[in-house]
Amino acid sequence: MVDRVVFIARDIIEENRKLAEGLRRLYDRLGLTVLEFLGGPGSGKTTLIERLLELFTRDYDPHEIVYIGGDVATSLDTERIARFGVHAIQINTGGTCHLEVPHVEAALEKLGGEEFLRGKKFLIIENVGNIICPFNFPLGAHARVMVADVTEGEDKFVKHPMSTRVSDVIVINKIDLADYLGVNLDKMIEDARRINPRARIFLVSARTGAGVGELYEALKGVRGG
Ligand SMILES: Nc1nc2c(ncn2[C@@H]2O[C@H](COP(=O)(O)OP(=O)(O)O)[C@@H](O)[C@H]2O)c(=O)[nH]1
Ligand SMILES: [Mg+2]
Image 1 (cartoon, rainbow, N blue to C red):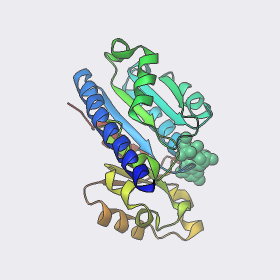
Image 2 (cartoon, protein in one colour):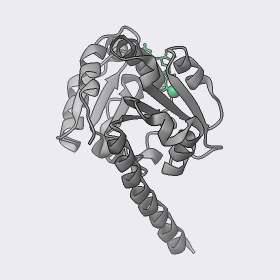
Image 3 (cartoon, helix red, strand yellow):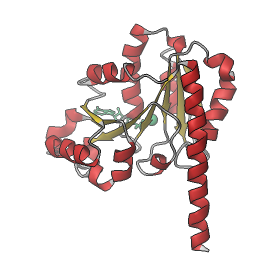
């Protein structure tokens, strides 16, 4: 019985991976850059996206930007993001701890499908707040951005090597709190680098805005196709 469960899970993961390749082809065909934010609940994903949108909406028309927020039950994050005038849609997974490709496809379809996406520049996906589940379920994004914050413990990356490894960008958030907590930021950076040497690492505070400009420049430069 247990073996069977494992095999079924593998099938689901493999099936999602294939579907994600299809989504990536769609994004590339449309010239849409897709950024996925993943990280534990409360790590600061929505706050960071808000800070980034302050910069994105200076350089781009808000109508060129789409946000999909994944959450188990509420639409609170999407309401926060909609204030920026971007297209924002909520996915409630009903308890599932990560987004899968069909969730994203359903959201895009609801927004108007390919017709709607034509001319759009950025799609920002905020995954369900969870540091474990999302890593196995890529959504075709050009960059997966892992958000970890200093209150989660400085051994975050060592404890979550899978999520660390699949990420293209690693953000250490809430650095404004680092001194209070006695967190060794150098150790966090060292761990992240060792586990994922190819990822770009940014120290930021979504609260004060420190480091957000550099992160924005990097994310703006992510291009598909
Ligand atoms: N001190 C501090 N608080 C932050 C920072 N980023 C987010 N927060 C706070 O952390 C809490 C969770 O943030 P939120 O963006 O909702 O996290 P999410 O669940 O990952 O989307 C909120 O109270 C934020 O105001 C930061 O850089 N510094
Ligand atoms: Mg959020």
